[in-house]
Length: 301
Image 1: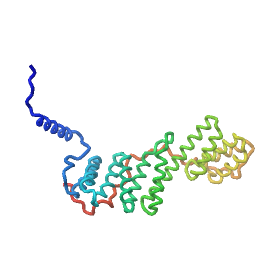
Image 2: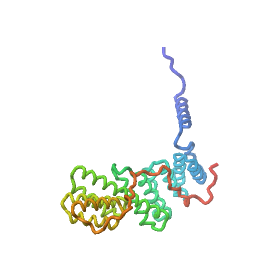
Image 3: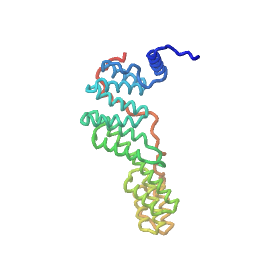
């Protein structure tokens, strides 16, 4: 005969609830404990800031979310949105960080701290740029977001850093065009290759890939029988990069065909500076929005 337990259902439910609570506390919970208790906004915010200092990004997000939930119309709530964006960025949760930044921009477009929101959004796209041999969707998004920072806030420190990163992004995009152009050359599709190299000269002429792109145009135009175009691009290469080895190669190629560009190759030059496939720094360089922190935050206690 099976013995039926007489333990009340309510007691079983309470026991299960306690077990779940203990399990959540025992595990490495990503949310702060007792987060749903009503607490002073200053204490919630300061505790979140303390978790940031300890690099406990997920717990920091939990406290700043509670600031928003419990005090949605306060000044602290506005600050907490940016702090969430920063914490998500630090934990490499770029989608969430971009979402936080966009939410801040939508709610407070005229606020001075919107510059930081635009900047951290751009940096999140920038740090997702991958090797030139893969899809460059994030590269295009990064370029658009960085240009937006420069256009909106041209005299800020964010714009100064964005300009430097725009150069790196352009170099990445030029490298992608060069990779495709070289592939077309290997496949024998000379005309398609020439179009790719010409794109580099027209759109990314200040990047480190420009000397090679000009040389490849000399090479492809000679293959296509367009001697005048080959000679013209060789002259442009010699005028702008007289000491570059790419021009020395182009000069030898042209003279071997009885053609001579207007500029003699300079001696002692070296090949232009070419970046390795793009990788972001392991150490984060974006600082938290200190201007948004309260002047004298209370202790986390």
